[in-house]
Length: 327
Image (cartoon, rainbow, N blue to C red; front, side):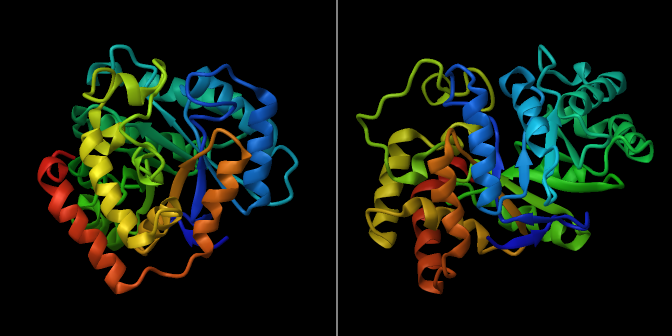
């Protein structure tokens, strides 16, 4: 496993990190504490030292499991949590200074730590980025020692650009993958200039970039890949990165012609790591085997200039027009 700086935070994080929205079992399944602990242990054993979670993941169970796991670990494990998605309806007015403080303190309690390594606003409505008092609250929490750093998880590039206007902004979490390339031209340059870490999520476009799906693939009714393809429940861009499923399959076929029928997952992850502005890639895992597969991407050699150009050509020909300027 290789490690990178998370911006100017002083944290050296594993370039393949763990997202814990599926911790304890597959999407929609009952939560298994044993599976959660085995998954975390496997990640730790494979050099992963950065866990991304949120207060809403499995109704707080994810945070509790991580808190239990990190106790007594010889090597430092960094934990980034997120807050705000508890707000119902999820509108700007629900983001109050009191709510941000309460959610942060609740995460502290569930994790059992004195200070959060990183707290992130969890894809808030765009209007929240134009409310300085919310970011002043995060600055105050840092001065009080309840958090060490703060950042934001965003849907749109412009939200990240606005967030970096606020003093103390440490990280931006953004969807970035072979099917979502706008961040590298519109967001990454400023982040590098300001020393802000880039955390990449949805690296495999909800599994499309594993190359395992076909037109006959079926998804359970509790799976967002079934119920959120048009943004019925939350931002459409979170499901298949906003790419039409059939179009995505067409693009995947082109990518397989470049990288082979097997192994697209690793090349998709390694493609993200070709950008030195990227601090880490958040990969999800419902069990240990996925972790073993994903971490291998850190040891892959760099993609060639020709491979990079071919990926861009697939994006430009099939993906750019329908999605590039939406997020």
